Image (cartoon, rainbow, N blue to C red):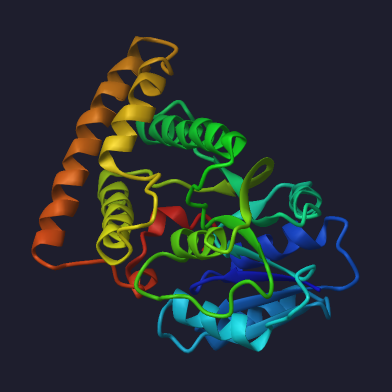
Length: 301
């Protein structure tokens, strides 16, 4: 059984697009889509706009994304490790070949977890769109190298997949796309990066939204170091400098983009400063972040 879990938060139009992006592919017969959302009106909208019996709705109890995923893992647990969970969000959508790429990679029984490649939909012609290209392509560059070496790396919550039966529950005080791969890695399974399985993401297009999103992400990953210090870090301030600085400096195609790159360096320094300041005040990552999520990353709702 292939179970695709789409977690959303009051974004019905985007969620329908995310559903259709899977249904338009060569969808295996023993497959289903479960939309997880805390708003009953989203269920009604989906029923009106998606006429497919393979699409189901799970009412998120409103205790956070990780809490809801734990419930879904337990309700749909299987000892058959050929069964697969594919996890994605309602405000993104996958490429036409993504399902095939994911399932082909998981034919290797040594692979327990895979992650796809986020692609920003923002235009390169403005500063925030350009920043999104630099950062997403930089992550792609790093993940390719680490995956080829067979080392541990953290996945992308925009699109990743795991074998059912390996995880029944996971801690809710850290991001699921970090802790789940680590728990699977500890069971001696491989993690693979599948860049041909693309997922399209709307990036923040203004300073306030960009700042809020980036600080939240940094706080989430710093929380991992406190709670699980033995976990190898692939996202950190020093790794960003070590593995990303030269890539970013080589990225610009003209003088304007070079200036934007320098601005990005200072912006990244600033958000790390703000994130660490919040952490010192004990303002750590909380799983209820969706309630204050930024609006510019919701293109349809």
